[in-house]
Image 1 (cartoon, rainbow, N blue to C red):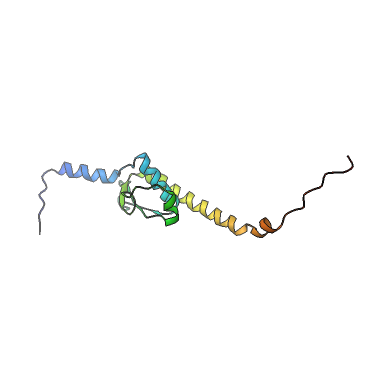
Image 2 (tube, one colour):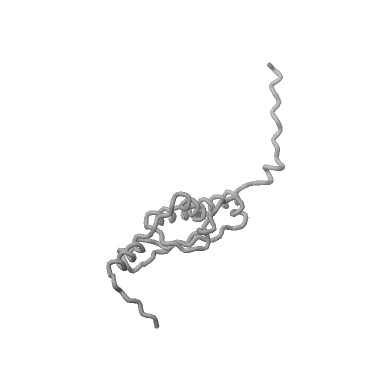
Length: 133
């Protein structure tokens, strides 16, 4: 078994604090993560649910469906990886996940209520102008 000598406890604490706080994505990465979150392709989980001081989250970004991927410009270094994200960005991404679910559900509800038949086969007669004038 390999032993690791601990010589600087302060350095170890600093590294642990970095993980507890998490890391912010830059604007480009956040926008890409948000697009995947809206599509339901992001999984968020607290880094350490038992430690109230740890506010960071783990985030996993999954590959989008091929049809969606055709329209999105995504960095391959984001997809299929797990990141430690700070609490603020994680909260916003969770809100985007919720909004995406609501938007997609509304789309399917509208689709279920839509009357395609009448749109295609029922054409009202054009009104004739009054001939009394």
